[in-house]
Each structure stands twice: as C-alpha cells, then as structure tokens.
Length: 211
Ligand code: AMP
Image (cartoon, rainbow, N blue to C red):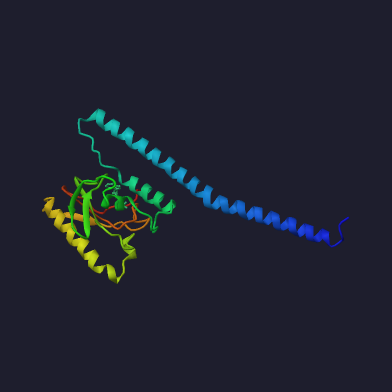
C-alpha cells in the first residue's frame, strides 16, 4: 500500500516522463527528418530539372546538328550550394575536396602552382576556359566573408595569380573573376576560391533566378 502523497508524485513523474519523450521526438525530428525531407524535395526538384534539360537537349539534337555542350547548367550549383549548407559543411573546419587536391590525394588538372596558391581547371566548366585559384592553406578562409586584416596579403596574391594564369591561358580579350560566398552566393566548397571564366564572349548579368 503506497502512502497518500505518492499519487501526485507518481502523476508528476509520469507527466515529466511524457514531456521528455515529446522533447526527444521533436528534437530528433528537427535534426534528422526535416533536413532529410528538405534534401529529398530538393533532389526531386533537381531530377525534374535534369529531366527537362535532357528532353530539351534531345529535341535540339534531333532538329539541328549542333554539337551538344558538356557545360553544366547554373542550377546544378544552386542545388550543390543548398546541399552543402544542409549537410553542415558551410563554415565547418572539415577538410574539403580542395585540400585533397592541394595534397594531391585526388587528381586535378593543375595549371599553376606557387608557395601560396594553386590554380586548376574546374571539373564542371561554365565557360570555354574555367579555372579556380585557391590558397594552398585555407587559414580560416572557408569563404570570402571570413576575411580579416591578416588575409589581405593572401587575397591580393590570389587576385594577382588569377590575372597571371589568365594571361598564361591566353585570355587576352578579357575574363571574369567570381567569388561565390555562402548559400545564397551558390558556394558549395568551403575553401575560398576564385573562379576565372573566359575564352569566349560572356553575358551579363550573371546568376539571376528565373522568375
Ligand atoms: P562554388 O560553387 O563557388 O563553391 O564552386 C565550387 C567549384 O568547384 C564548382 O565550380 C565545381 O565544379 C568545382 N569542383 C568541385 N570539385 C572539383 C574537383 N574535384 N576538381 C575541380 N573542380 C571541382
């Protein structure tokens, strides 16, 4: 036989237990299921776009004899940036694919190298010539907006390298230097990099979403 004070105490414990369970469920849902749901809906949207592009490309190929280009559509980068953001890669200090290129753990077409910077061809070119210039040591520069006073010299060196390699690539008629920052800037690799694009007439403005 329990004493009379036990009944409210037992109810309070049961109530607390239910509260803890609800909190754990909500936390798990927010941390695991919500990002997964968002990711799968993004993937579905991307697959639809890829499907649309494929059918558009097929139509073009059957009606004309124009060679199909291997350049990726800009929206792939939007998706990649959103995925990197959702996967928590943004601003993380984790080793990136560019660190592996610097350490030669994975291959890349390196076109320039000095003690501070490395330039290599973009695997998914958005212009006839498209290469990236990166600092060999990231030094906290996951993105441009992380720059501090101490980075000024390195940033200048990267800009200088961009034009040096552009000359080497014979981009005498002009080129464009782009730095994507953060998810809305379409950044997918969190190791600062300068995109250098050229080799043909570029258009302007860049990167406006279809309305
Ligand atoms: P961003 O979207 O500004 O972060 O640009 C990242 C760029 O890195 C994209 O243009 C990718 O095509 C490029 N990229 C990713 N992996 C590689 C790789 N293994 N080799 C060369 N370029 C890469």
